[in-house]
Image (cartoon, rainbow, N blue to C red; front, side, top):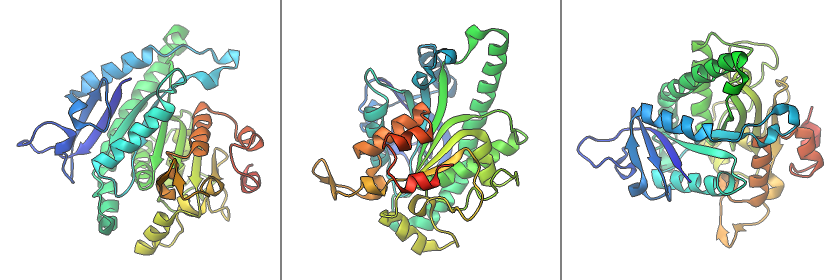
Length: 344
């Protein structure tokens, strides 16, 4: 299988062109491909030009099977998915998480399609939380550039498909954002929505999975009312938003203590239901999946366990496939009774 990476870490000119040489600051966007992996081996990655990266990705998506939504098989349509890592991740740590996601969801006969790692310069230092948050904000424009370009491509494809159905795009666009990667995405989506004149009729993202999101839990408090907030941008550019959270997450508990910006973390407390919530936004309490202290014999933090615990991986697969939330609850893929109380 192929591996894909877009990075905005600085790449010093006096060092080899390799992920092993990435710096800790924001730099120009670079584009990387690996035809065989593993993704964790920096020597397997090749630096390519932006246009070559785009053409390779378009060619890969063109090989996705065409799915006629009238047949009821829309859930089998394949994805181009972005994975945005979180806080305190060195490149090696995020590559390992990306490899795990690819192995679980984007490989073999049940592959959901292609997955792209979006790499931003997290400091990888627990004492650097506030600088990391600033890095995430500073990197938002770079991610917005990528998403804006994707928006224009998808819009052009929709227009072409109206004239000729054979030109319909065979890929869905989805995002899995982890921890502070959700803050980076929040700021980037706000930029995209503003650039595109705040569209209300075209979604860019099919499914957004906000995993252990290190953002305020009242992000979507404007509900169906459009107030030009960051939450409005996410809700209006996305078909469905799912926040996966757990009160057992000690990392988000610590992050709240480090800054205390006034609201609880979405990834620890779930959505603040004291406010109205857009109909396409919901949350799933995954705490019941994290009873064990180890996974396959290895100790694991709840904050990162979403990507190794079988139940959460199965849930993410069905969410990306677009299975209705009521079905997910009724089939036990979302723990009850909390999920039942939150489904509308």
